[in-house]
Length: 134
Image (tube, rainbow, N blue to C red):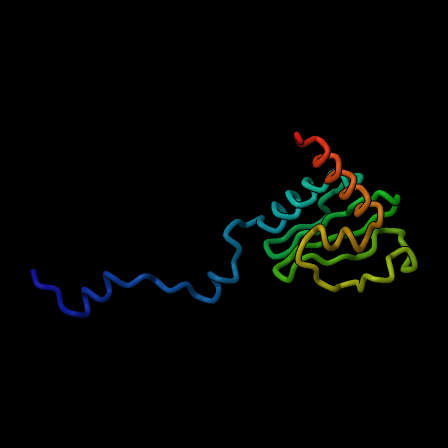
């Protein structure tokens, strides 16, 4: 059986994803899984965290910082953003942070939110370096 030029072109083409396919995360709970993983990796620099909301496009967690206050950290396709925790007054949020500003990494946003986080992270790094053989 002969194939026409159109038939051979159709069979060798790779389907092009639609705009809807590209906008959809590969895993339905990707933001939640990624935020959870990122915060678990920072266990030395935070007290604890709880996921408080989750959609396919955004996840948010209440994070207890070493200073004793809470922040709401969210992850979406725009990056990490911070908000105030329940009962927290605006004056408790560091002046350097603009609520709603996006950060590329969890380390960046935690460094701005918590001076104790930066200290704990540095101390952990020095401890690991000292444990290396000479």
